[in-house]
Length: 266
Length: 266
Image 1 (cartoon, rainbow over the protein chains, first blue to last red):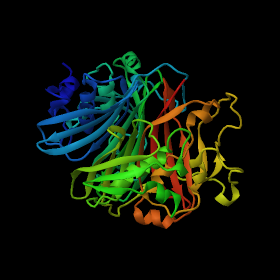
Image 2 (cartoon, rainbow over the protein chains, first blue to last red):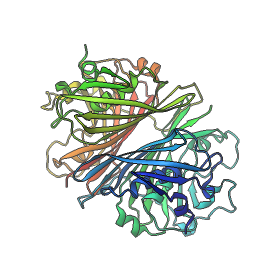
Image 3 (tube, helix red, strand yellow):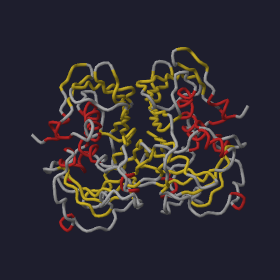
Image 4 (cartoon, each protein chain N blue to C red):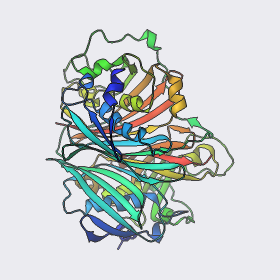
C-alpha cells in the first residue's frame, strides 16, 4: 500500500462520520502536512455513499494545528440538486473543531472548452535534477520535486526575490493521480514568503481553495506522470499573504487551479 | 439609506440567526445578484456579537437559485482561537439550504508587506466613459462601471477573444467602501465565457472565494472612490470555468483578490 493511501484511509463510523489518523510519513515541522489533512477531509466526501458526481470546488479552512493521533471527519450533503451537490465537512479532535471545509461535486458533461493559462515552456522532467538529499521534514520526502525556478532560497540572507516557483512534481514513489492526491499536490509549494525575502518566518495556511478542471478520466490518464506546478503570491500585508497556483499534466492540460491565504508572524 | 445597506440589512432572530430579504434593486436575470447574496451571508458574521477581528477569507457556495423573498442566515463560530476565528454559515429558504459558506476572521497586526501584483497602468476614471444607457438587469445599474478593456462583446457573433476585463467600478450612487460592499464588488464581473466567445450562454456561479488584503482602516480610507477591477478566466472545460480577479484602490493598493468557478451550459 502506498504511504498516501495509508495516510488518507478512513474507517466508517456511520452517518457520514469517519475516523482517520495523522500520518508520521507526512509529518510537517509541527503537526501534519496540510495537503494530506485536506485530502483526508475530501476523502470523506469521495467515499460517501450518497456522493453525486466528482469534485469541482473544495475549500478547506485550517482552524487549529492537528495533534498527532486520531480525528473524526464528518461530511454532510447540505443540498443535492439534479447535477450538483453541496457538502459541509468538519474535522474534530475530541470535542473541538480543527478544520472546516465545503465541497461542490457535480456530474460533468462534455462541452466546448478553452484555456487561457498555457503551460509555461520549461525543460522536461528528465532534464531537471531532483534534490540531492533527503529533507528533514518528512512530508517533503513523499514528493519528488524537480525545481525549474524558485526553489528554496540558497541562504537565509534576507535577499528579496520574486515569490514565483515552477517545479515538476509527483508522489514519491509514483502513484496514479486522483482527486485526493491532486488535493495534496495543490499544497506542495513551500511558503511564498520564504522565497520572497529569504527570511525564516513562522507561517500557517489558514484557508485553501482548489478548483478541479479535470474529471476522473483525465486524472487517470495522467497516471503517475509528473505535474508542472506553478505558485506565486499576489500580496503580503499585515500578517497574511496569498498564493495562487496552477497544476498542469505533462501534456500541458491545466488540471487544477488553487489559492490559499497564509498567516505569517512578522 | 443607500440601496446596498437596505439590501444587506438583517433582522436578528437570536442565537446567530438573522432574517434577510432579497432586494429588487439588486435583481439579476433570474433571482438576486450573487454578490449581494454573498454580502448578506458575510453580514451575519460582521454583525455577530461574538465576532473576533476582521474578515481574512470568505468562501460562498451557491447551492440553489434564491427565490424572491425572505431567507434565514445562520452563522456559527466553529472555532475561536486567540487571534483567529472560523465561521460556518448557511442560508435557508424554508427547510432547504440555498447557500453554504465559511469565513475566517482575525486580528491583524502590522508587519512587513509587499505586493507582486502591481495595478496595471490604465487611464484614470475621469478619462474612461461610463456606460451610455441603463441596463435591463437591475443590479448592473447599482454600479458605476467604466470599462477600460474587455467590456461585453459588441455583438453575439461567436468571435473569440481573451476573457480579460479591466474596469473602474464603484457603487452607484457612491457609498463608502466596507467589507460587505467589497464582497459584492468581487462578483461584479460579467461571466468570462460571454467575453471569451461572444455567445449568450446560460451560466451560474457555483463557488466564490475572496481574500481580503486590506483591513477596516484601509477600506475606510478608500472612501467612495473607484476600484480598479481585473478579471480573467484560466480554464473552460466540461461545463465549468474559473475566474481569477483583483481589486485595487485608486492609489494602487491591492485590497482583495477573488476566485470563482462558474457552471456553463454548453
